[in-house]
Image 1 (cartoon, one colour):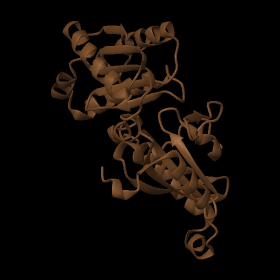
Image 2 (spheres, rainbow, N blue to C red):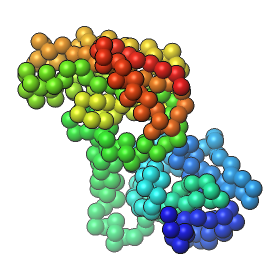
Image 3 (spheres, rainbow, N blue to C red):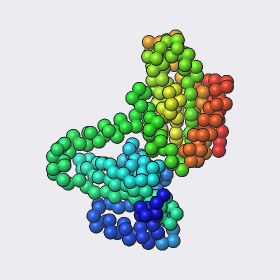
Image 4 (cartoon, rainbow, N blue to C red):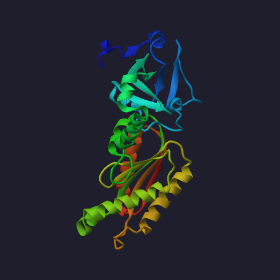
Length: 288
């Protein structure tokens, strides 16, 4: 990366820049994307505000759907988005920075008070548009699961994930060939609906490919994770596809447990999935 872009800074330099930027912006802070935590940079080291999460400033209880800092961290660039709290709208500018060798994201936030800008939409209308955009940007239109773009922009670069499972629908091509693509779509929707019944709001259900899905859990007890995969597998095997009662479903699963980088966990889950598909309708599991 070109050092002339001002991305590489020392602790002293970044603290001076933050103080200067605070004269212009309402909020200026450094964020560790993997920890979803604000970071304080000292001259000797950096400390994480473990008790605070970066999304709390937006009155949210979990990671933002359209996390601009995750996107910037993955692309190592600079981006802008709008965020809101109640009826107040904020512009967020995020840029990738490396402080004494530590990669972080600097967020600069200011409240929108431009009457001309807001008057063109109306505050409520603009908030609705932002909410709909954030929701649809990363949603698979068929199943309602997260889409591959969400993985590439929000998850792939994260350094920590507690458990990951990769799921593949057994004999899915045969379903399409025998009953048609409408039936295949109905089968996928049935599977995702069953998965959603077994996960929490903070867990990730993601359509990774045509009939491949990823499940991701930031924190979950190991026994609960193992049992959850078996429960999902068993219930899908008993599920009926609406209007296609003759279709029987099954899935193969590769599951990995233990804190790991998302890239590494997905690769290992994919390897285990390959093992599971030799037998089909089973879970291949590993603790890492």
